Length: 300
Image (cartoon, rainbow, N blue to C red; front, side, top):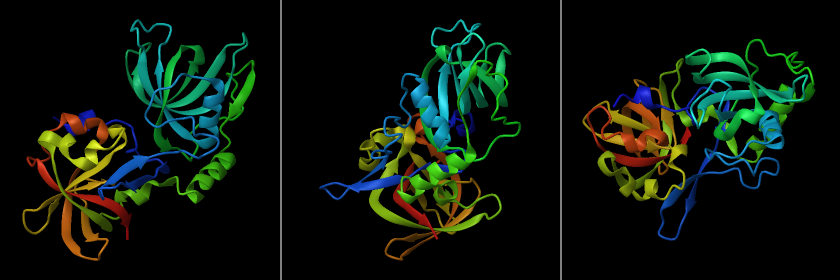
């Protein structure tokens, strides 16, 4: 299977912040990775990667926090009973001259029935009564796309709320201060400009076998596997393979791996990175199926 054809938008695109992954210790000394916005007063009722019914109140919160959303939308010409998925930055919520609720979004990716093709990075106007469900992807946008107009002229019946980027930055910084979200760069192993990174990890003392990935205790205990970040690496010197749970690496980049006890694992080349959306659909990465599993701690 070609991984590039199966990647989803959950937690793996170049946005400013992503929900922080934490590891909870349970009685048998296993760490369970979790993504959570519990105890966040304003958005604790917006789950991650779980479809919920649309409401103006919830969408208002999404806009105020700069939350990247996946909407299931059934346009007027859409004959499919379940509509089609669109990944958007929700930007302006308002009303038409006839009082219909409208949502202006920066459309990152999705199928356009009217244009009969996939469209990317374009402004779209959606009728909210045609949004069948909405899903928070776990990622946050922080910069206005080109062409953004707070005083959207399409909202002839008035604006309900709009993306104020000063407010968005304040709200996101509050989440950073609560250790609920982190900068995207903190969960990547290297970047386009700097292709070498040193990371600290914790040894799970288990192996991840892609032929039966769910048998691994760390993977099996994750309530929502779609939130997973997982990178596969091969040693530069030798023939060792490791998987890093909780981080994304750019294929081809080099990473030096050190344990939390300051033991050097070695220097590795990133083979590929995936999210949990595709974990069950692959059997090997670059021909290898068994990896020593480590938990990502931080980039150093």
